[in-house]
Image 1 (spheres, helix red, strand yellow):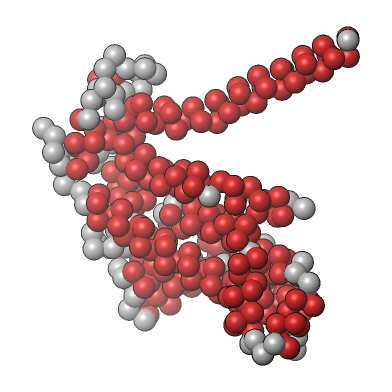
Image 2: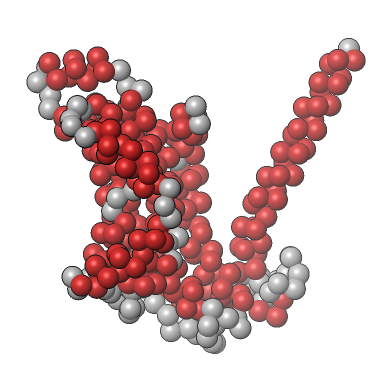
Length: 278
């Protein structure tokens, strides 16, 4: 009986700790939402404002008494387009390279595998200047192509897919080849459907990283025709920094889509993480 009570006490304590940690983790986002609807004279002065208003949102989209002539809707569409295309390209290239390294025999495979692991140790900022000079030389500055192509390959995604594909039995691949399937058919019709969980993990991490990418977009984007949300928000810290309410609203616009994606794919993400952490 004593042991049972002690066990219940331990479980209760774990639940309380879990709830407290969870609240601490989600509090910044809740605070972000609340402050984006708070009156301007109460922003950051109290956690729960005395009333709620849409003034910060009206400021962003040009319908308030004080407006910001900033292309928010265009920036959202640009960010969605660049992030989606870049992520799809990274996943497709990672799928093909990862499958080749895991299941196709060719000369130099070990060298390529080691190079990918070696490349992962270097921070991306090292390649920033060479990439910019190359993009400038071919005339892709201030274009979506210039924003997408340098981020079309992810060494981390290749590494993840390679290790996942190695766990797939070779007998399954050989059986498909005996039935007349080529490598592309095996990859996209047999292997890819088996890789939903790890693909979800890779997609969410890559999409989040590309969605929140600031430095490269800031260097390449030179006008409102290609500006993304990150660049737009960073520009607001100058002339509009005196308006903290709109800054919270703008940050919420940037954060909300990523949270929605994680909620939509949470089950597949958990399955993929279970494999990645094995």
